[in-house]
Image 1: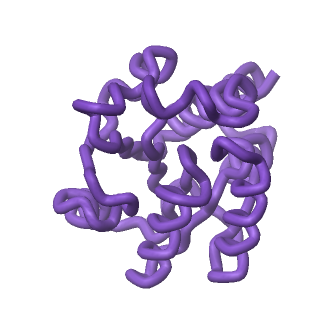
Image 2 (image 1 turned 30 degrees about the vertical axis):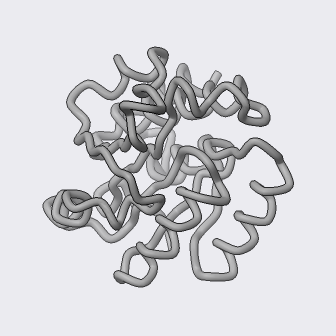
Length: 180
């Protein structure tokens, strides 16, 4: 299955002030998420982002906040975004089957969201360099589980180029500058 921008919506899960500091490869993951969001905005892919119990875990990282202006925002206490009351109705508004997934932690909130999306008939596409956990082993096991359950696993660069399809795409130069 080819991943098309017009069939996709992106979800950034819980990249928050108090959750993020102990994450493995945090700096690399944050840079990848920034590239992902920037690229998806160029390609006009809608964005949704979540915060898990922001009163206690803080808000989305300041490095991401300006990139998420205009994105749909939701708070949650459940690990899966799908259990948040306003998530599925928000997702249904876009009428897109592919859900591009980034965020933390890979083996908890990301995994449970992916499993629930599959149960609801969506196609989760996990951007592997845009997810992490406190321990890389947990991320690796989560990726394997998500793959076994039917999620597609990809990377930022691969995804953005696949969505463009050709260097003749009007967004090519802008995407190239983001990836560099």
